[in-house]
Length: 436
Image 1 (cartoon, rainbow, N blue to C red):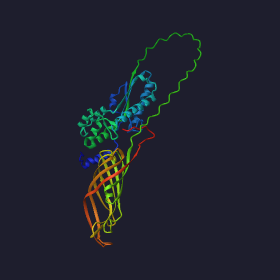
Image 2: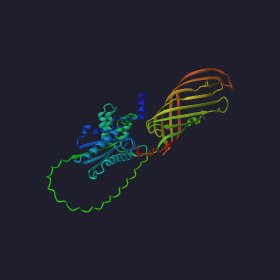
Image 3: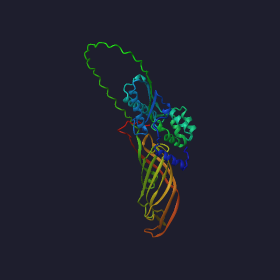
Image 4: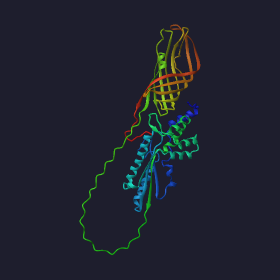
């Protein structure tokens, strides 16, 4: 069942979907200054969406990387400090499917390990612990427990603390069962707030380093000098083995995402009105649709005609996957010029300038069969139009009679559109990317 939402909620959803929220600090709350000690050090770096590359320019990473440099420089300079253990962790935010998010959290953990070993390559393997969290649900629970302003906070915490069987996304790939339950809350509004406030804090990797300080040994007595021994022959130099080449990074291809569709309204085609429309995906929730209509001919005789030239742009908000499947609402602006005669008495024509209007529409789109390139959408809209027209006699080259103006409230859009969607692989040749 479709939830009815007022215009304020729609505007909030629209702004949340377009905006890209960031918090001020890149340091994980669980590794704050009060947690650090002289022999325990925790450092966390953040990652961009879908990225496994540590970017110094992203959020507060530059400050964190300087801290890592200072930490290992201090350890190297102090000969009494030994590293006891080091734990590497990685996690991802929950937007994507389970398989990809597991690979993403593991790749981020490995990126952190590689960066640490570039500072200290002598860390023994037997003191390293690996922990790729996949999705740090426990950390998300902690963040929400501290935020009393989140709507439906108790319901969100109930879902996060519960066990759900795995579900599937639009491509049939397994996802955590809590994700679709969270997406249902208030028609997706709560999911957008979670994305805006917390998900950026879940795309990270960190390490926890434990050290110990050895005691200075007691000074030994200075022994009596011994006679100089005979010089020994110099040993032959030991040839070091050549280092093994590093493995090539694994690039995981993202699923194909529809970015544009071309469509036609079958109802207007049946009325002998040619039309062609295009729709462009702006964000996963927002798209822009525009359709043009053109009818230059008479119906069977000169005094039966519906000559129309019109264009109708529309901005849409989706509850499903934009351009592919789901419910949507739209804000459209019809603009038209016309020359219409439907009886023998009068002919109506725009006075050399177009009429215009404003309306709201609702629709539903779905793919045709298993092929997601072909689709169909059903839409209906109502609104207001400011109509000014000239009235002529309904005979050939009839004389001008008068000009009339009407404020029209009613149907402004109706269609059964058949469309073809164009997909494009979203790849970045410079960095390794995974879908979240």
